[in-house]
Length: 220
Image (cartoon, rainbow, N blue to C red; front, top):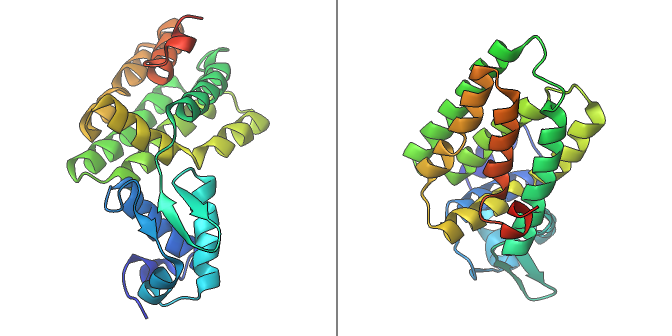
């Protein structure tokens, strides 16, 4: 039985989730590059699991925009298209802007501290060039903003986009030619706006953060 990262997580998640997590990390960290073929039988042998487990993991990765499945043949690592990344970023921006537009509420200082901690997690991920950990830190950072409104259904809608953020960030970092430290740095203006208590600036920084590089939305 394989004794890598999957074996370490089996106590907490299902086998397909554990296999998917291991493969997701490899894809996001470019250990498995775009156009790499993933053969079901080979992966089942490597991880010491059934081919059905591999198929379940692959379906999850396909839903996240990380692979494409060729039925009865193999799967291939993909990169999300620019237009799909644009749509996900625009939807996330609209929801987060909607969450903060009524104001910070009484917990602004606590929010600023929590955002800073999330940025520290992202910075640590950038130092070790760990894209998966960076995505997790990014999710934590933006989840704090979506929680400002306290609206459960708003957060539910936002959460539906999270599974694709790894693919979005991988595509955008490669397309723009930036490194992970720059991706972290682009969160700083948002943190500063919260620290200053400047709601107008926060909303402007959120728009810039999500829509920069997407002229169709910048022009609106």
